[in-house]
Amino acid sequence: MTAREQWQMATDAAHRYEQVVARHILGPWAPALVDAGLVSRGARVLDLACGTGVVARCAAQRAGIQGHVIGVDLNPSMIAVARSLPAPDGASIEWLQGSALAIPLADTSVDVVLCQQGLQFFPCRGTSLREMRRVLRHGGRLALSVWSSAGLYNTAIATALEQFAGKEIASRFHASREVPGRAELEQLTIDAGFSDVDVRVSRIHVHLPRLDRFALEHLAATPVAASIAALDLDSRQGIGASVMREMQRFGDGDGVTYPEETHTVTACLLRP
Image (cartoon, rainbow, N blue to C red):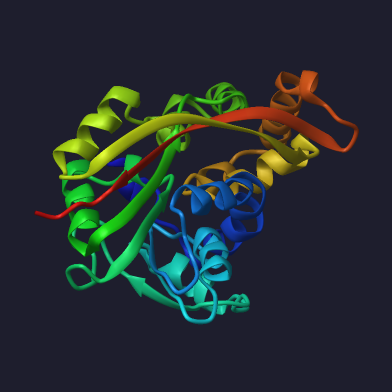
């Protein structure tokens, strides 16, 4: 099973994804990615691998009423949830189901391409980047992010899963952190035809609620949800307790606040 296949979700898991992952884990990063993309008033923006749309909604506010944002995701349940959420003030948002290997947009049709934590799941990263280049206009800008490491919280989850659910489930969960490194990201982007490629580490502190509960809510919002639900109560509680124990040094009274890093890639497109 490929990482891309593993992260296909049923509708109930997609709803939980919006409530848990998009809100607490990915949401705090969205403004920085929109900043990196230099999204301006009136821009046409593509949010590729948009999930439930946290980046798209942030970009819509930046682009304003004269702009337009298109969210594309392979998973129909993610798109369904994105469509169901209230529209933000600002640009209109169009939600499309589609593949990063064949983006359902015309050539040179957008000013900015944003992609938050999607590249690691694409079966052919080079093809997806060439597709991003294809849909960008001359002078357009790319901003994408992937995790720069396994991360403290995700490592704690994977450790707990290996102990209480087995190595296969732990590996499936951890697929999102199997990412290209800095040098590979730079070369992939250059090979796709982009100019002024820059790869840098971005850092923020992420706050999560009380982890013995949150960790299980998080897992219910992933493709391993059914496997976790099938465990006995003691094993599920053991996962939550293990994660909370591993992260206790970052406790802040009502949860944890811990440092997290991504690689952020920015580039522009100068057509011949």
